[in-house]
Image (cartoon, rainbow, N blue to C red):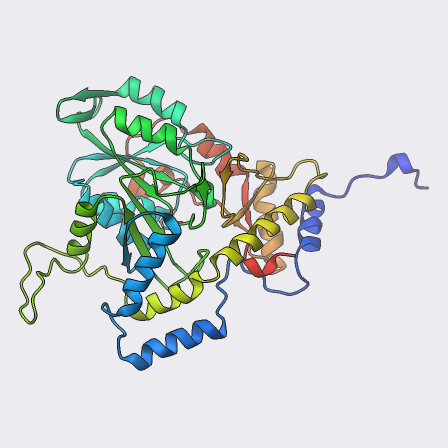
Length: 392
Ligand SMILES: *Cc1c(COP(=O)(O)O)cnc(C)c1O
């Protein structure tokens, strides 16, 4: 005996999973984000190998840097071995040193934070917003009024006594953070502003590419980003002097000379090899195609979960034009881990957010504001497979 009124809704996990499966191609495994390597990519890398220019000098590097300037609208671009080294160079050229504090979101990949410690400085964690997923300017402003004071030498933490030297903003999953407001805070408190745009190539706010508001900005071309160099990154900025300094420090601080090896500082070997630049340049030609595909995939997912109570696709504010690097599904916290387990059993690579930085052993004792939004996002967020080829 089965009356219609007695019909029970399927298990919430089953319901969410079946929507996901219906939205995806009938193949396994499906990765979180995989690179697409075309025959023109192979030709570009082959031509580079044939040319003999395979290391950290060569024409593809300069061409990639020019192309990145064109795409982002930032006049100076420096190709690096990865995004982490680009962030390290940004802190170095920004004069961040031992015992400085650097404000940074707790909801980010660890690569944002590690370079702060490379410099002997301390990360100081702040909370993010529920809609842009980026640093919350209102909360940050209130917090600085409480704990900071401006002196002629800069901004100081009244509790630790240390200088607060910089603010790193992250464009999480490709969604532009509230840059005009965050830039105003950085100016008011005399903080160096760095944009971690590792995930956000192609993302725009107010008709400008991300990276335009910071003193320095960083991209990544890791294998799982929208465009890949194998491994790679870039440092971008408006200021020619900063760019020159970063280039020098990232090239072993070698003085230009036809044959002599003269180095005037402790430098770093952070330049991108030409092989990687050839791959990135070839991939960059498809950026707009990928942006289009990822937008379609995001809409496709939004429609797939539209009428399902309990799960919804995260929508960035309409004027924050995301590259939709990863589409985020928000679920009830108690369903997050069971969904991850069920999806992985079916070879669907879903991922939670990164464990928030203040929960990692090496950053547990760093100064921080209350982080309720970070915690809530971590507990409820699931990143869905987002490779461009999955777009309908
Ligand atoms: C990928 C990433 C980085 C680091 O880039 P790598 O090229 O892997 O060193 C830094 N920050 C964020 C937010 C990232 O997603």
